[in-house]
Amino acid sequence: MLIQGRCHCGNISFFLAWEPDPADIPARACGCSFCTKHGGVWTSNPTGTLEVAVKDPALVSRYAFGTRTAEFHTCARCGIVPVVTSRIDGHTYAVVSVNAFEDVDQSLLRRVPTSFDGEENETRLARRKRNWIANVRFIETSN
Ligand SMILES: [Zn+2]
Image 1 (cartoon, rainbow, N blue to C red):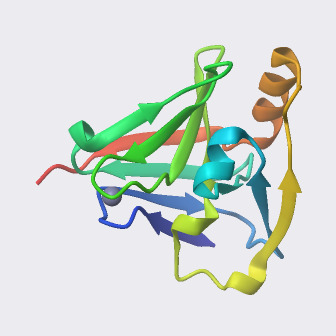
Image 2: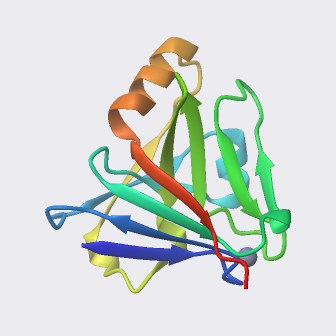
């Protein structure tokens, strides 16, 4: 399955290859203070391949807070957050927003609330290494 997503204006888009086709797609409503404010719901497949295409990098705000181990790639033009990355041991891991999906059957989404508040930093990074998308590539598509 090839999942496409993008911010509202199209400055940030992504393609997530998910093989074999998923029976369902976990959709984790994150309970952190940032995600609560913008309704962040995330998914990832550790064996998936993610390509993030950015038209204008000057219009991408990378927001980090708290432990500063994750960067929220926010479109500065339309305000949508399609992707979050975490750099661990020199490797980039990512999750994508199910809210930014295009043309994905909503019945595939298995919604689960999550809270990682109070999690130790080491546990947090180990969890991301296990669960987040490990094959991530950013490309600039300025035209
Ligand atoms: Zn945008």
